[in-house]
Length: 102
Image (cartoon, rainbow, N blue to C red; front, side, top):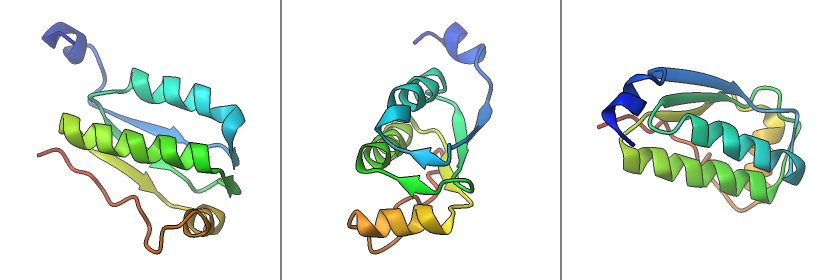
């Protein structure tokens, strides 16, 4: 990516996760995230009623990529269902700690 490409992007962006976070939304969510690469992202999980394994994997992968890129990435306002879903999928602690650009 060139400096010109980066300078034309917004410095930060906000996304709202859908209520049903499953396989059917992963392709669109992935495309949205890729379009925001190198941008600070704040993702609201307030409306999530179900979180599937693939969607969680996508978000965790994005978090790692943003960390490697030195960009801020956060999942905020997790609904009870989002938190419970992450626990059911094996996380004893909420896996989305804020990743702040270095």
